[in-house]
Image 1 (spheres, rainbow, N blue to C red):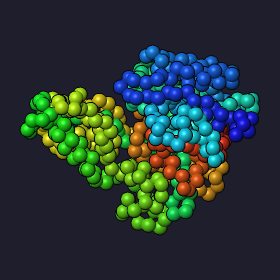
Image 2: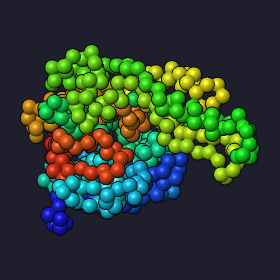
Image 3: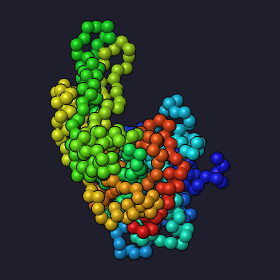
Image 4: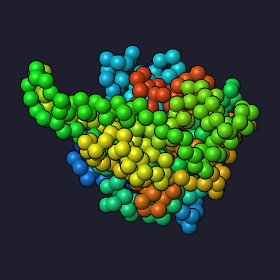
Length: 431
């Protein structure tokens, strides 16, 4: 499709996808500098004054403040992250960093997480300012580095060293909420009002080094493999919170099914089933294995990384249970530990988000949910800012949108981006 026929929100999302900001974790990343400069240049052309903060070489954050009509009201932070997880090009059917528009979809790493939302933020604000209007209150537009590594080199440093960026702010909105799911052929929107806690762990198994041909009963790789398999096969029990209880009630109202079987209710959401089921329980998934250096050498040490997402308030219990599962011979090291959050589904901002969706998709219910992953709202919570997930997208019923977070052939409908821009601009004008 020629550039002249692409909506601005699609062009911006495509441009950002073409800037490879892959973040491998542990301080290994391409860096966000070029993407931050792209965003800053766009904001500057709107008459704003962007500020940059680069605490670590190439790990660039950018912020601009939009004055509101009522400076006495608390400011609203509208934020995104500029990094993406890596993509293995051979696994994709398209170049993950081409930003291809095909079949009514924008394809590429970041199309879902979350260069789509970054483009929606920029164009929504542009709609307001180009019309000579102001938002109801001050908006603080922030675009962070390193979210895909838990924000340790991004938002965590920004709130520590640049708290003045967020002066007067009490609430924030960002990714992974406001999108639609289809439940038994009925559309509904999920509004994110909480996040599970995060434990990124390293398992360390020790053994005795030796020749690969020997009889050997102290093999670190074997010990690690047994521990990883035990964790990966563990099915954690359902443990509901006020938010997940409200989610189940909303799904029950849509389907007529009882709330007593959460997994069955989640199954009614089609492609979103696995995403919703993860909100009812702790999840612990092995993600990386490291061991050995030669085919015929038994190594002394073997390690694995485990991504654990925990129902808020149960972190210590989960750590103790994981140690019981793997046994005392396996050392568990905490690489990153971050808070869980849960906020009531009420208040002026929640009402405004629900109303904005209602104006653009009348009669469609909005249901609260607890995100099974995490966002930079965790860092903002440390300075007293309450965060929500609201990246509004009206999606086709058969699109596995939630399955494309960190997945292959990540893509988002062009029409959904245009919808999101309009809803977000409507919200920012009125909230």
